[in-house]
Length: 488
Image (cartoon, rainbow, N blue to C red; front, side, top):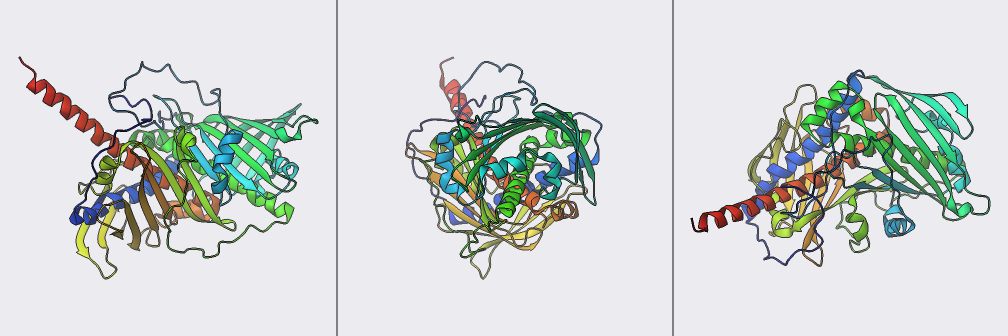
């Protein structure tokens, strides 16, 4: 059944009550999501880095649909190197202002069919716009502050354009690529229009695609930077294609992770040049608090795509929040979080979780999880605690093994028209999983932050996907029942 658009209205439905045993057994599902989300991102990195000689697979981020909606088959999507990149409007940036005050934000646009999603990122930087523009427009300087780049060599200049080759080296791998940047400064009479930097990835180990930077003055010493990006890993390498076939999230995860790396790097360098020390949190690493996000304010953006927001403590990530509309009601979403069935391969093959079905001294249910996949396999133990029997808020914490220091909070918020929104909040170190990811994250804390954001979004999207599966199953059962009752 086609999924073609986000449901704009939803009839009120009966409140769903969750049996306490169901809440305890939710550990089986939530734990597998958390583990598999981190490992899918690991797999994405692993697939990209090992070989650079073959094409990739088609992946996409798809919009949740109104069940029963149909539409004509979409036309073949344009390539990532020519497809239009949208940007965040002034109204979008205003809606995001409370989140931007805490850290960078990303909107992952919905798509149809095989079209690749655009990732729209933004950050507030306490430095003059001219300073930030000078940083963005000088790729040769990127290795000083972007942890994923070791060298950039400018290979040609022509007018406002320059071509450059880049290299990313770690103890585990080396990636290479080639880009072309075109710069557009603001008109002298309208400096408020800011700078634009268009970048085309013409080939290499991360495929082809485009980036669009905008540097917008927001005051004498404050700048809003936006970055729109779309990379196509189908043009990268063989193993990336194999991972893409196992999970449609690979392309989105890599785009989102690298977008945050670039944005955070520019932020660090601009603050350094401006002599600005980013504010620290009053109580870093405090227990994850209930979300205070204004969903009405973000309504238009959530109709456009999923949202990921970082909360920074100075220059470091404290926690990440992902928001995803579900296109259905709470009565379909809550059972997903409390579904006792094995999560299995919903995110990637090999993920398993086993509830120990005991309540420990901390009042939670302990469970073991495992990703039984060669090379990137890992395991651990976690604790799930439901704040009440409704299942609207679930807390998960690591106990031992991989992700043992991780903390997560899942909220189900309901819009006035009855649609549920998943709010997933997480504080964890993606490097606390496998030797492979530890090696990657060790080379760049910003890349670790980007991976955390991609993993948290993956969990929110998995909850939505399973909820929509339940809606479609119910609709199919109703149709079968009608057919059975029809006179013959």
